[in-house]
Image (cartoon, rainbow, N blue to C red):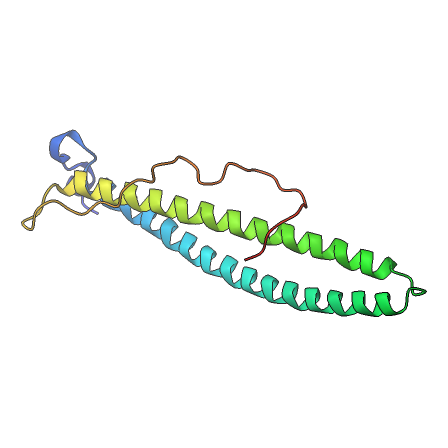
Length: 153
């Protein structure tokens, strides 16, 4: 990199062009990493949901057997229900994490667009399209989870 490139005068008092370009690149790389993390979480959530439905079907079958044979011990059923409760909590976590990733990705892309627009100024095609910043600062207000009742869709 030439000395002039890193210290070039910024347009209208903004960041120097090379610094703005580097910052935009870093923000876009982080945004792409978050997209990849979102896909991984979605895959894990899909697998978890499939296992949950499978376990739920088995639990219904066990419940029928216990209804037909009341002398059988139901401790195994109680244990399985405890595990299902944990699965529900994990599904809630996946949903909250996905919402945060999408929200953060939108914020990063908006910042990257704004930096590029400010550093480069308008081009011959007119104003650059800048992704709107999310209206709310945080889509998820919950920062911890406990097992509880959940409606599945």
